Image (cartoon, rainbow, N blue to C red; front, side):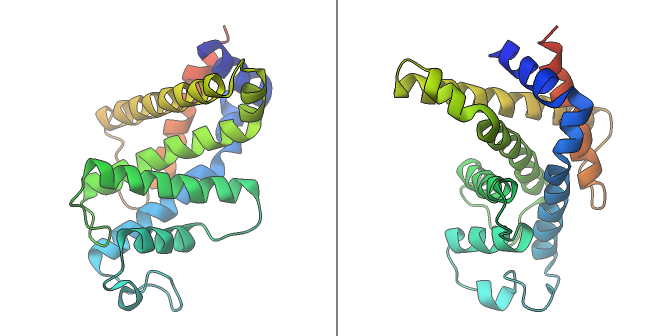
Amino acid sequence: MRRGFGHYVRSGYGGSATATRRMGGTAATAGALGGALAGLARGEPPPPGSPLDPALLAGRSADEIMDAVVEAVRPVDGTQDAEASRAAIRDALSELLTRFPDADLLNLTSEQRELAIERFTAHDVFRRFDLDVGQTIREKAPTTATGLSRLKQARDYVKETVAAAFRRLREAGRTLTAGRISEVVRAALRETFDVFEGYAE
């Protein structure tokens, strides 16, 4: 699997630098997600017509709030990248609520927001990987169950590698503060793809 990720980054994208540029939309969306969640937590009025209008969200279920966040952060534009990112936002928020069952999506703590951004990044990287090579993995597997198991292993590995990249950045003092989210996510993506590319050597 590690060699597969190495080949994916080196041959598919021409190296970690190109892969990071290709995933620039992930960093931008992460910044928008962080801004939206922070704005909700601070009670800031959203732009007119925003799905994140507190008056519209009052009394809504967690699922409905997640849908509103997805719409506000990554509107539909008909591209596969947008659909992947929309699903990744939802995956990240669902995972956040699994880890923090009492979390209030309208008032997340800074720790919870950071987790949501980290998990979004991992899910988005995996969903792009799945778009690029997932069908081949499914077709070459001896059984459907084996194909799904291999993709689950790949997803878990991406999550671990992305989490490790964010940890290293935190230890180096590069935190997900307002205005720096996209920059830090780009750095985490570069570290992640550097790790992957190393397995091709």
